[in-house]
Length: 105
Image (cartoon, rainbow, N blue to C red; front, side, top):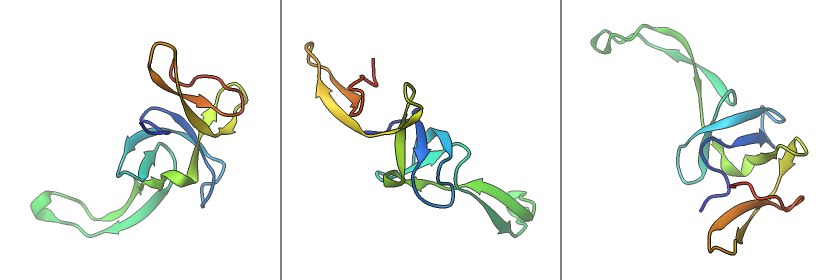
């Protein structure tokens, strides 16, 4: 089970986009995630007529390392650490360490 999943609201902790919030769009690798509105770069792209691709400057989003983001706690509206806990019915769930609230209800 991962501490950060697709669809979670996260806060960027380090890098050029520090402090920005966004939603996790996808898990790129085991250790990289793609966050909406974060880590956009401009790429100078050559035209390729065989692929019918125009040339120019294209803006695209790159993945961020998972250690540079933290889950957003909606109660405090701040970044929070996440732990795992087993419920009485045997389910394994994530919870916020500061408030002991369960993330996955």
